[in-house]
Image (cartoon, rainbow, N blue to C red; front, side, top):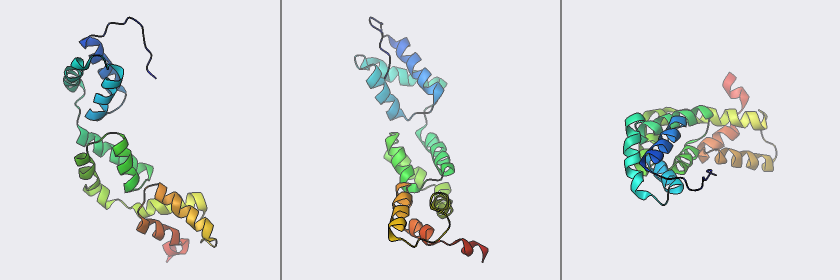
Length: 165
């Protein structure tokens, strides 16, 4: 929760500083920045647009480039396409950027199956499932990580001896 200082005069330079301070720590989408300004300076909406224009000088706000970097980080983390899409929505990416990033060559060529197999083996071991409950639990876990049902079923039915053959 932001710290409130009583009787603090809010002017354009204070809003600009706040925005630059935010952008110096991490990337934001333009919509997320607007929401932050609206939350922190609700009584001064006339300062919001000039502050975003000012911030563009020092930290260019490019939602598409940020989306690509975000995708790369999520792929390194080993989550599926659906989870990436959900996280991008939560970060206030525009729908067009999400569609563009998720249909990019990098996202399409990524091997989601090997990520799902690695997660399955790390959490549930390499032995085949003998219990239906354990298999269902593994399926829910992988679907929760954002993998498609096809990838989940392939990962669940994968055996270690398949790699050796």
